[in-house]
Image (cartoon, rainbow, N blue to C red; front, side):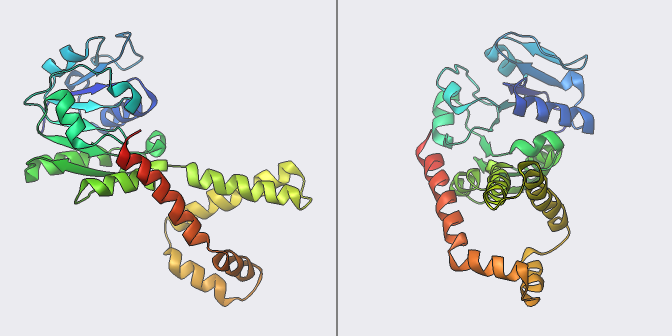
Length: 258
């Protein structure tokens, strides 16, 4: 699949454009090998990239097609992609629905998240249909242009991970907001509460990039101090079960369609 022409439908949306820019910056594709389709047929991309208003024209000119549109827009998509590999970045749309609508036999479902903007996304992907070693390596390298990636064994994994890693910064944002609001309720000035909560989430996340979370928790619990008391209280109140139910609720939406 090297030196193939890649077409992105929805390539000027936030996700499609972030991926396109990463592919170009990394040299994974040359501008002449990249096509973008959107409703206007215009876009602010580097010279050499073709931007089209006709989705079917893009399909005809592309060797591989990426669908980077909202699931709600999929109903309006009218393309014939028979004989072309199609990579879907849409949550909640199963392989069979994509095959039925596009005619493509080889469908790959992938779920990047908003961290594509800083090229720190985790992207699980699943291939339905025969995928050779060279093709699989190509798909893996494509998503490594925006972070890290794993091929998963079945489609259910994609639906579950849509609600876990696919949420991107949503869970850390919820934690930061909760920490800040509780600090304000305890009498901490709002500006200070916001900075303190941000420090926990952003600084802590950066530390975890190089540490095992289980070991970190064990070390902090061993001090039997302030942090240990807070962690113990959260554990006793079932924080893992709360998180598990939240992710399962999202996964159910992904499994049954949006």
